[in-house]
Amino acid sequence: TESKAIAYVEALLELKLLDLTEFKDKIKVESTDGVSGLRKMSFLIFGKPKLRTKKLIDERTKVFLLAKAKLDHQSAPQTRILQTIYRLGTGDNRACPKFGSHWSALGFQGNDPGTDLRGAGLYGLLQLLYLLENEPVLCHRILLLSRSEDQKFPFAVVSFNWTGIVLQVMREGKIFPLINNRGSVFEMLNELHTAIYYSFYLKWKNDMCTIVNFGEVSKQLDKDVRKNPSVCLKQLQRYKEEMKARSEQNSEKIEFGNSS
Image (cartoon, rainbow, N blue to C red):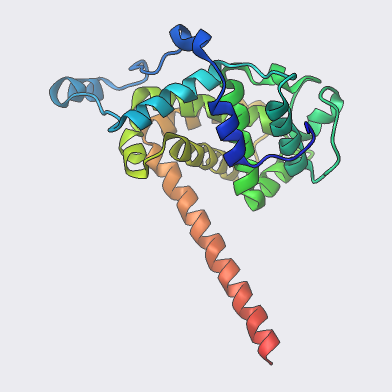
């Protein structure tokens, strides 16, 4: 049914099945607009970075096609994605209406969440689902900050902004070596999206930013990530390692307590 929760892996499979050939001539998979002159020179000498396999090239195309696709409220899988995002983000397990002001609790700005996807399209929705499913603790912290009186911001809409940066990084090719090593466009770009949101969270929280600072913070983040995506990815990796160490410490304490 349309209200049944859907896991990211199933959602990805469902969206991959969509016929998006109408957008084939409208997507732009490569761009050197934000590439420095020195890097453009290296392209001439050494050639542009490339994805190694047809699988990765096809995945890149699928990403950009999904970013062009709009939300279809008549589609059961897409409705399930939305319902799951709402449940994970609010903790409310009841089915919610497709339209209404309740979406503002997750940082959508209109009564129809489809109108907020903008340039991120269905791909932005997929990345938001991945973030909520795979990083529940981080998402809880970000959501709390997004709802705070002084530092609030629209959680979902901001997520779609980061998907926009992810797409541009993909176009410019700087993340290709990481994708080639990972063997998956979707996995690497999801990690980058999470890393961007974590980087934003730290900046927003530590610098006591408010919504008037969003343009400036977003612009700097865009510049930094496109210059070197590895920096924020390493920052996220450190966070994950710290979380894992804390979890192991807590589990050791519990085991010690039980053994006594």
